[in-house]
Image (cartoon, rainbow, N blue to C red):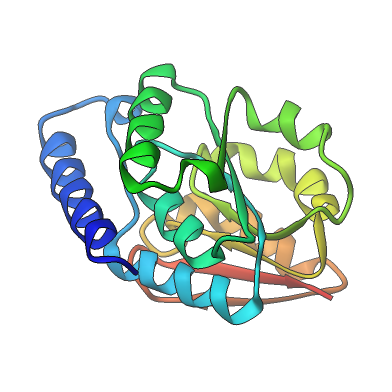
Length: 193
């Protein structure tokens, strides 16, 4: 990772923390992943050679930058964001990082986007969005991941009760292996056989 990207990530980490401490409404917060989660996502991306990455929940692009850097020049991250103001921040951050050519930012609702994706078209899928919607998206999430593809769900420890029904449903699904990793706010991993 280049020094300029490291500096930008530190800046965004500080910005996110300061911004979120002054905003009461959840939808207005950046809600960025933790730095150790970013490192973890980068290791996962590199170790599996993921080049087709889908992220649901861009915010200001902090996690997207970790993924795009790890995917390398051959990789592409498609990231979905519903809030126009966050999408604007993210675009600026992608350009500042020099990674904008590796990133496709889609503004809109994730369920509709997923329905239009090709089957087995994603190597790694990172969910950090509206947790209550995950169960409804599950058939499409499972369909778009390739065999051997990896689903990573953020906030699996910090919001364990809210995510419990979704995680249990995935655990009970035939053809999947799962693990709960206590890094950052907790990452739920599911590999498609």
